[in-house]
Image 1 (cartoon, rainbow, N blue to C red):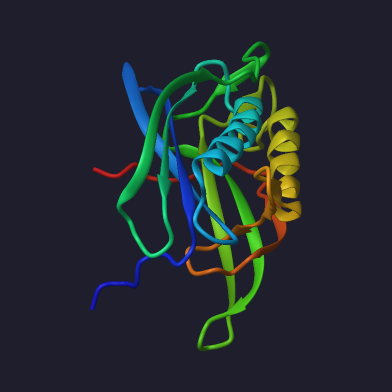
Image 2 (image 1 turned 60 degrees about the vertical axis):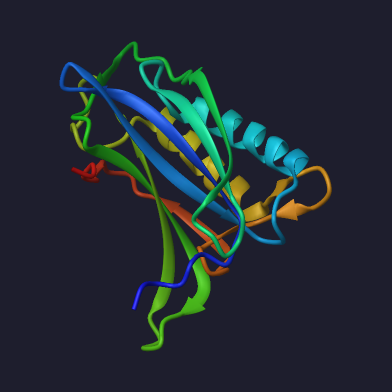
Length: 190
C-alpha cells in the first residue's frame, strides 16, 4: 500500500551546487501548518525561505526553483525558476565533497506507534569547513546561520495573514531544533 500523501501544504526549495566538474541539484520540502497557500502567501513564504537560504549557501551554490504543493497532493500547484546565489563567503574556508551535508534536525511532540519520538530532518549540501580546522566541523559562521534558520522555523513564518509553523508531511509541528556540529553524508538520488 503506498504511503498517504502529505496532509500539509508545502514549498520545495531546489538548490544547485558544484559536483564533479558539473553541478547537481538537491532540495528540501518545507511543510507548513494551516490550510493551502494562496498565491500571496506562497510568495511571502518563498521570500522568507530565500532570505534564510542565501545566508547558509556558499557563493558557489544557488537556489534554482521553488515548487508549491497543496495538502493531500504531490502534484505541484505552482513552480518558479530562479537563480539566487548564496552569500556565504568562501575565503578562508574549504569545500567538502558534494555529497557531504549539514544536518538540521527538528524535534516534534509526535510519537510513533511504538512511542518513539518523530524528528524532521533537513540537509544542506555544500557545507564549508574552516581552513586548518579538524576537517569535520561545519564552519562556525555557517552553523550559526543554520541555527538561526532553525530558530525561525520553530517560531514560525508570517505569510502576510498568519504565522505558519514548520511541520512534517502529516502535521507534526517542530518544537525545537538542533544543528549537528559535524558534517554528515547525504547521498544524491541515482
